[in-house]
Length: 386
Ligand code: NDP
Ligand code: MG
Image (cartoon, rainbow, N blue to C red; front, side):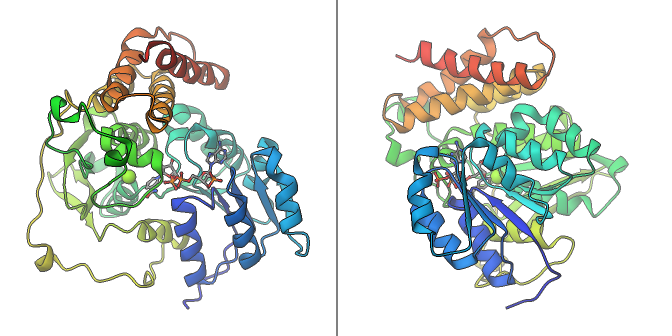
C-alpha cells in the first residue's frame, strides 16, 4: 500500500461505476472517505459504509433511509437522506476533496454546494458543468475552490497543459472511441437494442454514459465540458475518433506541437491522478502500456449526420446561454426512455437535435432559468417521442 499525505474525501455517487473505482483507489492508497452517497443502492452503500466507516452516508431516495439506518445501526456511521443531506455530504468541513460521481444533472446542487464551500472537486459528473458551466465555474472562482477533471479526456488535456503556458494554447484534440456503432449507417442502426447499445468496446461504465457513448452524445457533452474547464471556444476543439482509446486527448500549442497523453483505458488512472495531483503513484494491478503490442493507432472524423447528438451539442455550444442545459435535459429524458425500451435508438439523436432547433431560450443564465431550460428539453422529448 502506498502512503500519501492525509486526504479527506467525500464520494458523491460511491455506488456507481466511477464511485466504486474511486473506492478501489482509496483502498490502494489508504484513504478513508468521510462521506459516501447513493441514490437507491442501499445494499452496496451499507457494505461500503461497513468497510470504510465514514462519518456520514446519504441515500437520496428518502423512502430507503430507514432500512439503511437499520443496516448500519451497530456502527458509528450517521445516516441521512434527501437532497439537503447530499449537499451536507458535499460540504462537510472535514473533507477537503469532493469526488463528483453522480450521474446526470442530479449532481448539480451538490457540485455547486462543494464549489461554494471552497472544496477541491474531482469531477467525473460532467452534466452539471454542461448545463450550468457558467455558474459552477463562477462559484469555483469566487470561493477559491478547484476543479480537477476525472473524465479521462479532460484529465489528459489537464496533464498536457503542463507542457506549456496557457497563453500558448491553440486548441485541444478530444478523442472519441466511437462507441459500439462506429461506421454503421442509419439503416443499420434502425433496429439496435438496449443490449447492443450497452456493449461498449473499450470501457465498462454506468448505463447512461454507455448509451451516450453509443450516440456520441458523450463527446458532445465533453466538448462543452472542455469549454468550461479550459476556457475554449468550440472551434478550438477538434473531435477525432480513435478506436483504441489509448490517446486520451491532447493539447495543440501555438507552434503546432500536439502534446498528447496516452495510457490504457482504465478510469482508475484519471481518478487517482485527481486525488494525488500533482504527485503520481502506481495504479494497483494496472498493466504496462505496450505500444508494440497495440501495433497501430487509428484516427478518423466522426459522422455527424448519423450521430446527430454530436451535431446537436455543437449547435448548443455555439448558441450558448441556456441551450447546453436544454440539450442535456433532452438527452437525459431520451436516454431514460430508450433504457426503458420506449424509444428507438435513432430517435435519441433526432429528438435531442429537434430540441436545440425548436426551443426558444433567450433568457439570462440564472440557476432557475437553467433548470427551466433543462425541463424544457425533457418536455420536448416527452411530447414528441412516438
Ligand atoms: P453510474 O450510473 O454507474 O453511477 C451513478 C451514481 O450516482 C450511483 O452512485 C447512483 O446511485 C448515483 N445516482 C443516480 N441518480 C442519482 C440521483 N438522482 N441523485 C443522487 N445520486 C444519484 O454512473 P457512472 O459512474 O458511470 O457515471 C457517473 C458520472 O461520471 C456521469 O456523469 C458520467 O458521465 C461520468 N463519467 C463516467 C465514466 C465511467 O467510466 N463510468 C467516465 C467518465 C465520466 P445508485 O447506485 O444508488 O443508483
Ligand atoms: Mg470521457
